[in-house]
Amino acid sequence: MKPIFLLNGPNLNLLGQRQPEIYGRETLADVEALCTRLAQSLGHELRCHQSNHEGALVDLIQEARVEGSAIIINPGAYSHTSVAILDALNAFDGPVIEVHISNIHKRETFRHHSFVSSRADGVIAGCGTQGYIMALHRLAHLLSAK
Image 1 (tube, helix red, strand yellow):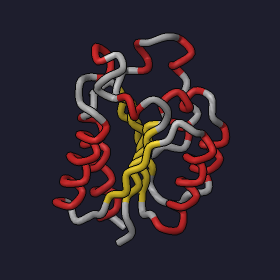
Image 2: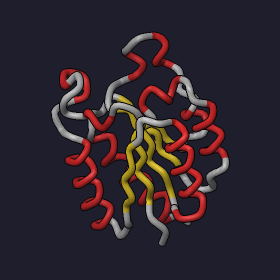
Image 3: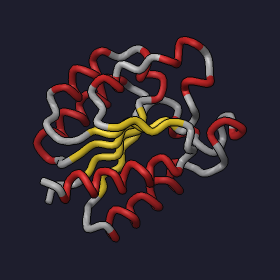
Image 4: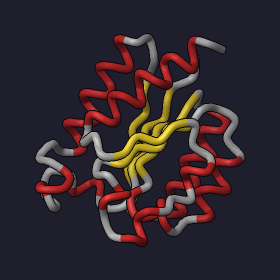
């Protein structure tokens, strides 16, 4: 089976350092290690990537079209601004789960809308980094149903 891509957008490389009262104290490396172990236990390979650059994320989504079975994406601030990421996701045939560590609906008004949500097969928000675990379980279920 092709791997699941775990994509994180801008500033998520600062996870554990930036606003820990909102995003927690776990680092991105902690999240990726936990998710990699879980994916393996569920019989899947996980490819983890983070970029602060919109075009790099689009390139990774396009790579997943050929090499991936599913995508977990936390687009960060690009959720609210990027039609380019939405267009790339719309060209991807597998399931997509959007993850937000914080509850974007309890934050500033501009964060309430996500372009990515219109393509996502599921959206997990406000569950902290546990949202990534939930996303992996959901994708494992969706992929087993194929």
